[in-house]
Length: 454
Image (cartoon, rainbow, N blue to C red):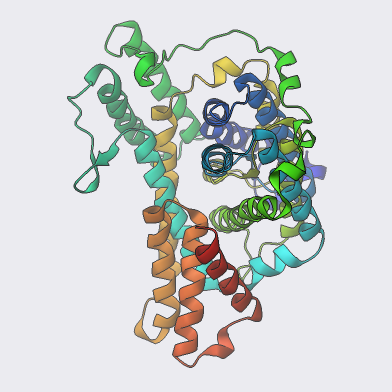
């Protein structure tokens, strides 16, 4: 392990890395339940989607471990799976096989871009102020996701969002929201007392308390409203289901789709995946302390290649775009610094094909506190932003980038707002020498996206 992952050089050890990998997996395990649910609405078999998700996550995360030696995990990207099911296969009306073909082509394009310096050049062209802003923005963003997954934030017609009424539906939504609050305090105290594996202990402890409350009747499962039993199911998975989606991306009649229409779908996947991945890599790398003095990530090319390979393999197996997960920051928060963390997570994804019902039983109220706590850790990077008036041409785009991520519910939208505002403000303030050439190209790409792809 030392020879492969250089543990001492990164100030870590096997125990810490394995615990970090477990923590990352626990916070990502929800995708094993959510992805089949979303893609099944497009007509895909849920079990086949689950198996494709597990296998592609394993391949992509192992590539990240051995190609880049980074503690990042990959799986089917949230948002991209919704775009696949509800836009491409829903409003556009294309069969899910067409969606998989578009993802497959996107993956091949990304492999080519990753083998060259294009994606790396884009990453390095983003100014340090925006990179730091991305970290802070992602912190608020994943905190909001945690609050939403815990049902602490609910929809409100007047104010858009509001805090949950704990008395309403107490035995389902109410009690699980209170468990999330308990889990947050429990996890925070463990973390502040520097208990090893505090985030993982917090997740499991909160889940076990939920199980106890179900056994005594305080929590009452109601599958019709999405509140299932917290007790894990030890049934096995039907592996033959993978035949439903395996290689289906090649079963497409391109004449009925049209080259132009297909190209628009591919570009849409390509665009969102590119900037979600860049934003995630910036955020998690900053959290891990592995960006250099110029804000660059050493070894980013193999990291981007792992992401591209995962997308290609995932499309072939039968799932939507595979992307680097922001939940990797929970593993980093637990001490993960090398590819051993990623390898641990990858192995757990592979093992979960055997015991998928058990892993999908991990409730969101148990993992949500981890997202909230890590969101705080990432938010602390705001101290590195220079906010005095002399640097407002950097600070204002950084601010817009930060607020756009949670309010628009998208990492890539936050990056686009930050980049566009950075270029416009610098130009109008006579500081065009501070703008790198690629930034102009990115602005044009974002404007094309907003004009033609919305």
